[in-house]
Amino acid sequence: MKRSTIFTSAFLALLIVGCSNDEEPDNPCGSFSNPEYVINDYTLSVFNSDLRGEHVSGDVYESVDAIDFKNFIIKLEIEKNSLAKRFDSVFDFSLMGKAYACSPVLPFTEQRISSIKITSSAAFNDDLPAGSSLNDVFDVVYLDYVPTPYYSEKNGDVDYFSVAEFIAQPDNMPAEITQLALNTEPKYKQNHIFYIEINFHSGEQFLLESREISFNQ
Image (cartoon, rainbow, N blue to C red; front, side, top):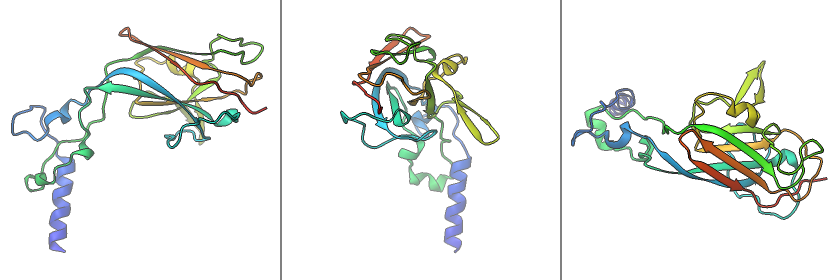
């Protein structure tokens, strides 16, 4: 019991006490103090899921069958470099005797989104012919590891921001994972290839496209 108490106290001390920012040779913090990354590209995947506000994982949707528009999820993942290793992936238990460790810091980037534009190769409805902006009919339904809001909540009800509302916010940090879902049923169901253009204030531009998608009648 006594040994267990000592172990618990030391572990709590490790979690509470942070390192200084100086990266001296004997400083175990190392790269923890600078978890900055730079986004080089995005990848786009399609999922069949009704999840909102949660990370969608598993197999991507590769079927040629039509999909329910309510389950159509576009997942955008960044490709990055210069990201320091996360605290929980390289924890060194030899630090237990020293009773201090680095405080975990969430990864971040200085890059900011200036615009996003979603279009389709096919007409969405009579008001949105092929090539029209679909920013109002797509919602942002999940972001990870960024402070940028993507929904509002009132009386327990969650209202996800449309892409148009989302990009209107200032200081819009790009997330490692962004998930988009339709908030409106398309009138024309067949042969949609979705194109997404993402621009950063620093000048980078990323052009993505989905495979051809059809929706259930």
